Image (tube, rainbow, N blue to C red):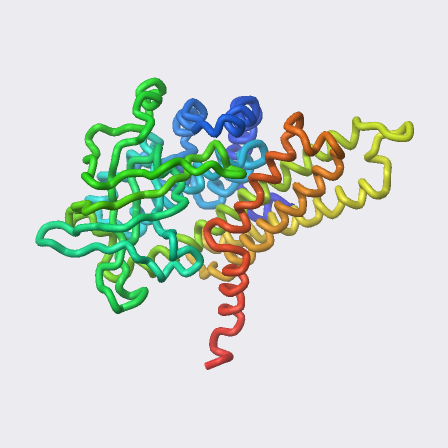
Length: 405
């Protein structure tokens, strides 16, 4: 891709910084955290110190003061070696922090964003429920107004950072019978479940944040991929949420969360491209040294065709990602482009990682090489933040808008 189409010298500097960090600090520990399913606190702390936990937010808010393109570059570079690290900054920034930045009051922004943007605590986003996955409008969690607070009851499923995080934006039904127009969003806080580790590394817990009684994480999910990323339920049992923790206008929670998901889809697309590129890098390296029939397998046409297909699709996917990011950064409509990028790149990640394993042969099926981890990490990209089927529906609605009236 011609970098000059989208990237400035500052973007190149961010890319070089994150690429070196990923190579030198993340790659050596990625397999261990994947195998043990442990949250990588040390490298997350280092990401915070580098400004990677708040890339698009202003320095006044504790962020790095860069832009959306720089954010996508960081996600892609991290995903080349470890998707769990990439989803940590993606979910934390887009899902956990951006709703407060975009829809919060000045007091809410001042209270929570500096903690999140600096990486002092982790944030999350509670939308998915047992019966409300692709049908996000099927929310059953309720919030009933009781004077100066709301009483929240219900649960959320598959929430990134549900255990390790401390600041969450969640949806709940405030006006039953109004469908999506009756859903509102709230900011909730709780302590991390890994307080001892937080004390050891010096991040992850902020004592001044109130522990809301009845708000707790469920059991940790034992996942196929993204195993170093913390995923659990969020449980609400008569949680008293102060009225000032209502995020945005009552009844607009669903609309605002859909806007948040549009942006999040670009992040998943960038992550997917990173996985695919990482798989291609590994396949190229392996094919150049692995010999069969007296020659490196990279000299065989069958292998060359697979490498060529991978490289071509990655190039196409990267254009989709940075075009959508450029539109978002410049305040232009990007919903269709985000869905296209997410759909194409997530499915590309699966194709590329399967090809990489095939090129590695039997070794690709072992943990001696990272390509098997890349394939496991790729699958969730076709599911999280809107399945491939939902992306196709979103794209079709944009294409047919006005034609079927």
